[in-house]
Length: 271
Ligand code: SIN
Ligand code: MN
Image (cartoon, rainbow, N blue to C red; front, top):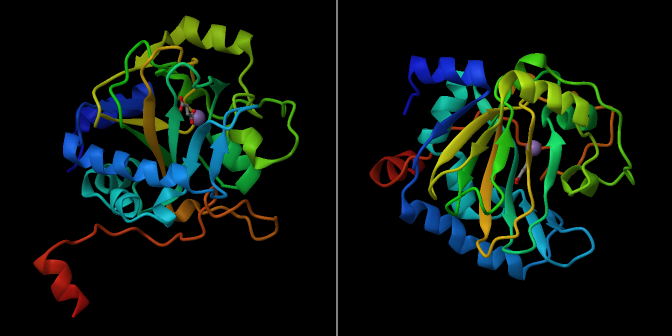
């Protein structure tokens, strides 16, 4: 389950790592099956597209759904997360981003860690994102764009945009902390652009300071992805003195995650 030394080196250099078809079609299908149920419910972690009732994202699915709870404990994810962070890990945030056919909106240029630093008082960028494709992601259905190497510049200080103050602004098409166009141009001049495409079941790891964005989905194909953010246990937010954001954005369960044992072994453990 470990990733190789070469893969790790490539992750540090570029700020991301692609693992094609890490999960089987069957595994992926289980994650998709739950989405129909989520869509029927009105839950606090559900977010709609601006000015529309179409769902844009479901947050914190592992907190109420067995399949997503099993996902965060999969050795294929836990082990590389520990390797990258050199620590035990827990899930700070999990979301399913749905980019509907014809209507899925864009994500402006941004980094992720600045949100967790400013909103949750997370001390450092000792975290790693991994996204899992629930659909084939192509050049047509709104793939993420990465600027390779941009994580090496650390957290780029940007002013807070037109925010109403609600957490929804941090996940909407008019994001709170955006990287300015001049800065994006200069970073792209140096690192170029990478479009995160792949088959359903592909996993892509990326650094919390990697500059990224994604365009609208005007194609007839939906683009659904899960993004898990593993945080190092030693990097838990210092949020005691602030009104902490909801559990589905800033997890309170900060104990080291363990692989889920199945079958005989787990039965034995339960006895
Ligand atoms: C993100 O930046 O967190 C999500 C981007 C996307 O879903 O396209
Ligand atoms: Mn992001």
